[in-house]
Length: 329
Ligand code: DON
Image 1 (tube, helix red, strand yellow):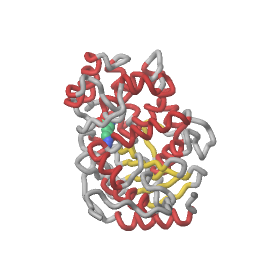
Image 2 (image 1 turned 45 degrees about the vertical axis):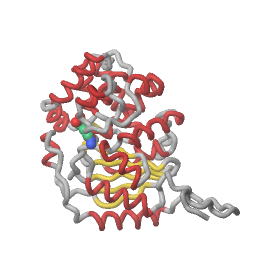
Image 3 (image 1 turned 90 degrees about the vertical axis):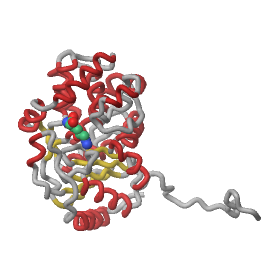
Image 4 (image 1 turned 135 degrees about the vertical axis):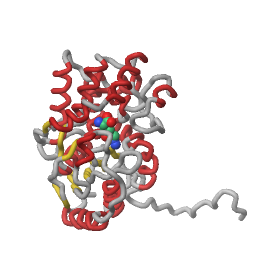
């Protein structure tokens, strides 16, 4: 069932108005350049599988993609090595621990478990086929651009800020190497991973990227196929499991859509076959998800009836409902 653009626009406007005054949360500060982004910025966008674009607020303001990049590098690595290799070498389970956790590796036999935490993302970046780090980076950037349908580019400032402070990720890269779960040079991989997090997107770009997943791998704005449709369910499953880190389960319970957050304040949710919702607002909750982004997307998904676990049409039966267990008749 398609939802008309005017209804989506009203829903976006309402969510923007309802959450704009929420000042809870704080910008990420472990990456210095993110701490100075205006915390009042707040954009929302929806892109449908028909390529319609609906926006509210600061939807054209650019911000750093950060962890949301993990989804698109996963897509490229899956094209390169196939979903079985991703499952065997990286995994498809939640870690139950923060995105930068070293303990998660120790607890799970040195397997990262998911491409959507830093360890699994580093491992996944190293699986992207390339003969040089520059080629690996160029292929990742090309993939991000194909998903966005626009020549998005690197922020030299965010990249420099992050490359000069990413000691924790460098340690994770060496741990992966010692565990046999790093498939290219660890420091070169860490540099490329850090760069893939430092590209700049608008909320609308992010919604186009998500709509490409919602549309089975073809970008609905450019019409170009970006990834094989059979890989999409695996990517969305990974997003459901770990896209919002420690709150992924709660997000599935309350919103019912695969999502992915980034510490730049971006958040993406995908309604397969229908549309993607993106939001941007820098202040984060304690696990690293945009506070306004979560609230706005949850409200929009609810108001548009997008919960994946809800049957679209009520099932009618002529039989009376069975008595609940334990009741005596
Ligand atoms: O590697 C990092 O820590 C950052 N470049 C990305 C982390 C991130 O976005 C986590 N997301 N919520």
